Length: 551
Image (cartoon, rainbow, N blue to C red; front, side, top):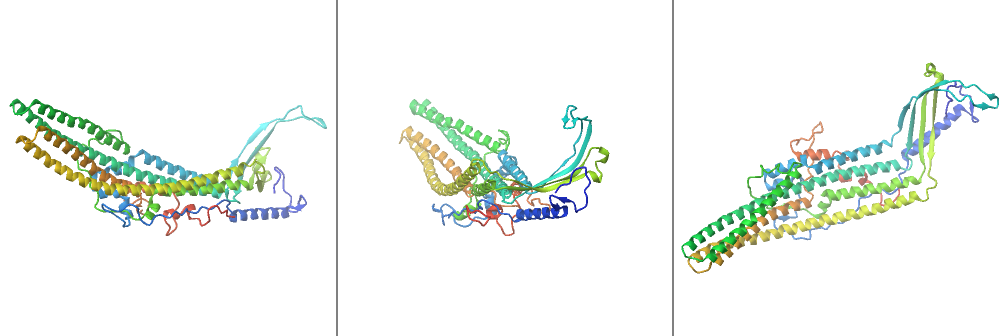
């Protein structure tokens, strides 16, 4: 229904199109009410998302040895697994990395981006309102002729002010599906943040262990260098006294220099590990050299590591959870594409004032308004909409395959970490026995050489074997602790613990960088239902069947 601009409305008995204006207004109101009702209870076309069901093995294939147990992992302990290594320096480095790492900052920015994008999609559920207020002054052409001949065209003014409103009634759920897409993308961004956190904590710990391992290997090499230097000096004295040959002196020399040549390589590896650690902290290379200058032993892993069962892994690993949310997003994309097959209904309206004289602009006679429905329907597009539905369906299939691949990769990483953890402990025990035997062999070879029972080559061979075995033992000690870190990383440790919040919404554990990051990263989604897990909120909670359209 509309009222002509600049004219006075007569009473309600005026005939418009064969109907009384009052009757016509009632008809429009009934039509608009019906359209609103359809929008409220309308269907959402396309398949509803259902979480994929993958049966996890009941137990791990690898035998749990070396301290690994099938006991369920404590979520709080797993969230701060690095504290089991009892190394204050490592704890400090991890907290600094969470605060300064650039990948974490980028992941947090992606969460903010996804949250804003969801807000954009949610805005489409509501009406839009705009204001206009043009004013014009001009004249028409004087060379305009009509049936009555030429007319004189004078200059005139025109003014108007008003509000325009429009609202797309989401009858077939296209807008709601787009909100589902944005919500799932937001949740996937949150899981990506957690996944970055899990990877970061593991990398910081691995590089720190590498620093300590290189330091221990340097200590071994320097100790052997000192012993071989002493041997070389004693051999030189014996040559000067005529008690041995120059051949023994040269053999002692190349044994000494061979050991000395290994030290620069170890120094280079140590510098690279320190620089890499500084980069993980978001700092310049060399920033941690001073605090890591003092040599300390390699952190000792705990006696027992609770592994739990494979089903726990599927619920905990952020990359698995992220793949699931991406599948939910892509499923909703099919609904967005399917909605393009159907007409779009909108309500449009405007109200305002219009006059040829500015002084009369806001008078009652200048008032004008209009309201009514609008329908648009793409009737022909050469099959583009249906092809887009096929595209989105194929992408959904790819997302499902990617989810299954992510699950298999996660299981593989845990199995490999369990085997490496147990087998490296066996290797360390053998190397420890071999190194102890090599120490005794060096002492025996030296005493027998002094007694003239063996030649000098036996002493040199024993010294070389001792250096090699001690170096391998130092590497094995680092590998065992590194394998524990890899096991925790494969289990998805490092993000599970959620900090308690006070009335202001701030974390009570505000001094811990981990809690600060989690509180930022996990506020992205909407508030979970009471009793619901983080995974059961959002589109994941839908009870439909894959591929079944809801109408």
